Amino acid sequence: MATSTRSGDVLAGRYRLIDLLSESGGGRFWRAHDRVLERYVALHVIAQDDPRAHELVEAARTSAQVLDPRILRVLDAEEEDGRCFVVNEWGTGISLDILVTHDGPLTPRNAAWLVADVADALARAHAAGVTHGRLNPENVLIDRYGAVRIIGMCVDAALHGLSPGDVQGDLEDLGGLLHCALTGTWPGPSGSIVPAAPRENDLTLSPRQVVAGVPQPLDVLWRELDQRGAVPRWRRRGGEHPDVSSAAAIAAELLAFVGDPAGAPARLARAIPPINELRPVWLPALADPLPHDASRDDIPVVPPAPEPEPEPEPDLEPESEDEPPIPLVTELPTEAGMPVFGDDEDVTWLRTRSTPPPPPPPFEDLPERPLFAPDPPGGRRRLPPVPSEPGGPPGGPTPTGFWPWETDTGPDAQESTDSLESVPGRSWLRLAMAVALAVLLLVAVAIAFNLGRGRTALGGDPQEAPTPTTTTTAGRAAPLDGVTAGALDPLGTDGDENGSLAGDVLDGDPRTSWRTDTYLQQLGPTGLKTGVGLVLDLGGTRTVATVELRMLDDGLMTSNQVGLYAVDGTAAPTAAPTGDPVAEATGGGRLNLTPAQPVKARYLVLWWTALPEVSGGFRAQVSEVVVRGE
Image 1 (cartoon, rainbow, N blue to C red):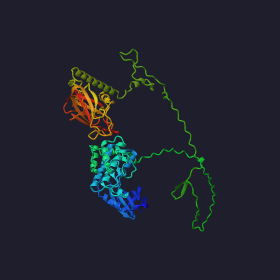
Image 2: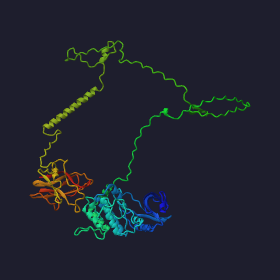
Image 3: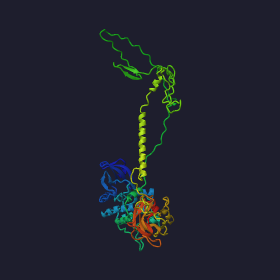
Image 4: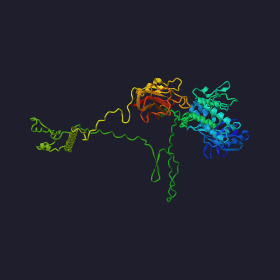
């Protein structure tokens, strides 16, 4: 029986059961190990006499017809020993139900991308004539790279005793997944651990009614999918109705809302919290053990037994003079110590000394050494003063050296002093210093001569001083003064986009800035507005060469897209710019908007059509704007 399966059992001689993941109505869902291919698999097992056994095998055969990397494949199906089991590919990641219950709803773009990927996989299955039948949040898996995997294609419905689903049921489940990803609640009829969606007057509330900030296109798409009643409850006359007739059409509608799909899997992967990650456990440090105190031991000390007196050896005499005496073999007691083996195979024992060794002899006092050398025989003798040279002070000695004492006492003492040699190498040092001074003098004379002729210090022609120009550096025009700034928000409800901060972009202080409002969705045709910007008043018609922007990139992804428009007139523009901009820039940091040719205008419009993504939405922030021209 299926209920008799336990962890460690081996099915079909190759699938060893490891972890019981879930149990429903006598059926069990296991994580198992394929001992033949050395991989983990998912295994559904029920009793062979269960009414669902036949439908489970048929569902496995049907699911095997779909080949899509986003759908976990069926690997094997077999009946043996009273059991019926189906083996599926094992997927790693976090399911949608755990994600929304632990971390809350997803952002609109992440939710749209997730459901669009599931819808595209279902479109391939529907094209092969296969439906899922029970597409709830537990059957949608997201791995750490943001890839989506669908679990239990056909098999999960059969295991729960449900009839094979149809295409309309899968489309309604797609709407339930969209509602769950946007609100963290589940409106579908299938069971799920996700809390049920709120209802009012027996009607399920739309995502926009449950959570504030849900974009209207996604809310309208869910209302079109929520057609389980006999009469469409949400359809409005004259309104736009997205195409929800097939899974492929739903995927196309959601991808149109997402826009550029680049980086969508990476953003979805960053939204997954580290719920199942292994974290190191740091054990507290233990103090060093205290030294052992033998006085506190409770074990009684047994005194050693007295050594027995040695017995006298018997005097054995040889029975005859030709035979040697037979030695007496006695059992020697075990002795403690280190054995020492001799050359004649005798063993002696190295024991500790019974008497302590004699102390070392005392240290002998070192002989005293005098601080100064002893006087030589005959006493010390000072050198006589040397007569002064001609021109020196009369009678004044001019000593050339000094020796502390003289050991010679004979008449030739003066001669031995006069014959002392000079210090070795002193004459060469004096010669090198004289040569260096001569070289420095020649260099100074040459520099003075060149400067006197009006040349450089090395004798070259002096360069002419650069003439002042109107540009600060080569190829760059000078900044224009007298420029003022104002916010431009013709598509907003109040027409003001933080206009009080617009002047901070021209104050020369990078710590102050102007920023747009934070939007929950990107600008564009599917957003709330197509653009927002700044108006720069030059004070008169002037020639503009380039406009430099300094952006503050504090978002996760930098994707500023801004255009430069030149407007000449007597009044500042108040409507959204039309036509092609004279210059465009995309990116972040420092942006340069340089027209192909310098333009003449009174007003400049900086118009953002895409904002960088930040925490909680989309927002652009500018710290400085510099207009260069004449």
